[in-house]
Image (cartoon, rainbow, N blue to C red; front, side):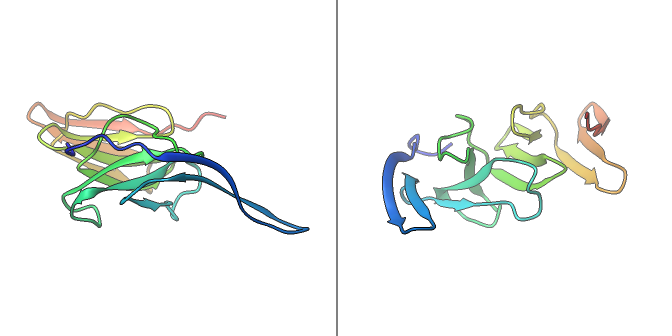
Length: 139
């Protein structure tokens, strides 16, 4: 999607240290914006808005990073939503919507997706019809 594949520059540098704290610089995503999802702390993923397109999830190009700063996936998304119950809605331009969690991506084949937060249901629609998913948490 973007003109170039962007990887962060890795560091292992002490940025600040005193008797009670050590802060280390671990990476730089040049010309990108990193965002933590404040709504759902269950996931370890950070949003990365790449330096093309518009922001605030409108015509953006984004991906996800792990807490160590590395890319979580090589895929780039035209929409990256907020996490709820460990899932975030994503879209790939001209392919459709899907979901991502810490480990996997649900199929990117739907024209629209909505989440019923009350009932932990996902309603996904495409030309074949509507598919209903139930979110079941193990453990």
